[in-house]
Image (cartoon, rainbow, N blue to C red; front, side, top):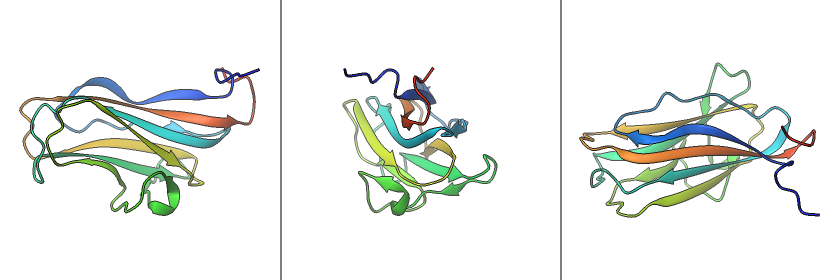
Length: 142
């Protein structure tokens, strides 16, 4: 029988809202799970993104939940060329909503996702992100 509900946990990394400035990242604990995917949903840009007025999604990880390091290509799936922990970058017009999926295969226990706004964002951009934790050590996941 197919059963995804009892095998995954979905945790909010960035609450759905309209943002015009950096969020305060939540610490996501991966204890008890052997895989994770970050799903980032970005609505139509509130401004026309440019090289100076941009939005970048920055992922960091940690062993202790206090001292965080930026992720690199070696920590990720479905993405390459990561510099400065930037797993998604919006530097051009973004008229339609999109969803970006990035697999985390690093071996650290904690993650944090920052929506890093640079430049002037007079009108906000709707966005949200979740971390989908998989391969649970104990099932069912509550």
